[in-house]
Length: 92
Image (cartoon, rainbow, N blue to C red; front, side, top):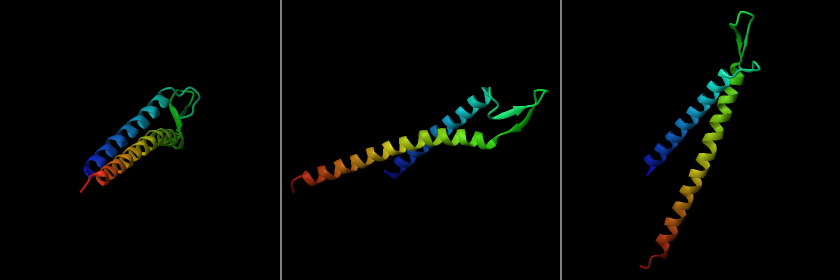
């Protein structure tokens, strides 16, 4: 039973990491206002804002991971509550 929960957590973690990385890649490729990096006159990157890149990744990562984990926790709680109540209803 515990292995199944760990498996679902790892899948959720992988999805959250994938979405976070994808949003950073999309943001860097559409760097219209120079939020992620600044280029010099020759078109070469002169400075990279790693803090902003990490902030974008973290915000998407947490916005995917936390809600899915909360919903999963509520589902497991209701499932355990229902199975406990059904075991009390059985006659001896």
